[in-house]
Amino acid sequence: MRFAIVKNAKELAERAFLEIKKVLDEKSDAVIGFATGSTPIPLYDKMADDHKRNGTSYKDVRAFNLDEYVGVDPGDKASFARFMQDRLFSRIDIDPANTDIPNGMAEDLSAECERYSAAVKEHPADIQILGIGANGHIAFNEPYTKPEEPTHIALLTARTRADNAAAFKDPSLVPQYALTMGIDEILTAKRILLLAMGENKAQAIYDMVMGRDDTSCPAAALRRHPDVTVVLDREAAGLLTFGEWERAAEEREARQAAERAEEELEANESDEAADGETAEAAADEASEADEDAAEEDVDADGAESEDGEDGEEADTSEADDDEAENGEDAADEEADEQDDDADASEEK
Ligand code: GLP
Image 1 (spheres, protein in one colour):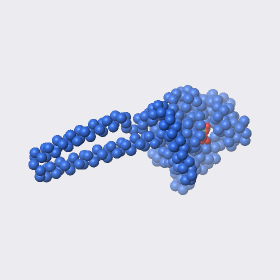
Image 2: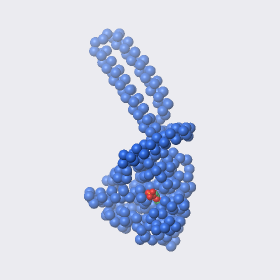
Image 3: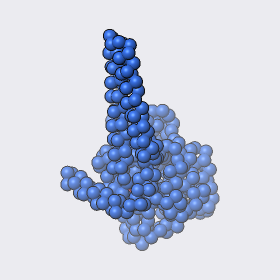
Image 4: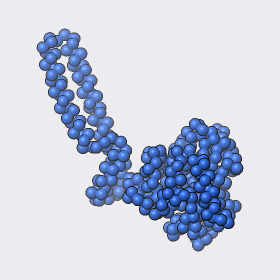
């Protein structure tokens, strides 16, 4: 999982667009999985703007959407079909025949789920855009959904219905059911691009990265995918312990710089020896240098084994253990993060 932390929605859109552009540059007839919700709107604005200015074409692109409400007409402003139409498809040159979304008005909803599952299987996404629910849902896969369940009828939780109420005139009009692509189906995408903004997503993001390895946070399934880019603002990243990862990286760099300096010194010393000192003196110096080097190796090895393996995964689990063992530190850090966030919003 790669992370990019951005300052605002504009930066989020720019960073996310790079990922989409990379895919389109490689493959003009790419399959793109789209998401709805407020988070990807700046990205869709950016895509529409780039299409207008730079002519990036979507005419051969095939689009699949993650989900749709049951019982909401595709022409209704609250439907995800209409959202995609208004927010993106009508603003780029995509062929409407190449766009697909589950039909929540189908007479036989189970048959519609089967149709959609087969279509997704036939055209796996080159890149899947995802948002995340405040309870960690991806698409409409609510907590405790079995990952292997293909496109299905989902019963929405009260929280999800409340979070999605803005598109409806009355919160009681938010449907109870939706059709959603399944978790394992989402994971068939070659790349995944997850976007999240705001403090109300911080817990879901924490659970996705460091929470229990079960289905309580559906987004945690993304840990199984080899190519996930997560673009977050500081608020959504607020519970992650990036500070520890950064410190570990700095320590590593300092150690490597010291090792390089030592090597240069040794090389200079042996040059000098070759340049004129007696063979005996040179031998003495060389053996001193060897001793120094041996000491250095021990230090370096010792430091290595304390820090564990290099890389993000090792850092992640290390941070995880620290948090579990030391709740106070985690709380302090959270307070620091919140201070930082307050500073950041003051700056804005
Ligand atoms: C809905 C969609 C999800 C989306 C989520 C987050 O529940 N089904 O696909 O990720 O909303 O929406 P927002 O970006 O508005 O927070």
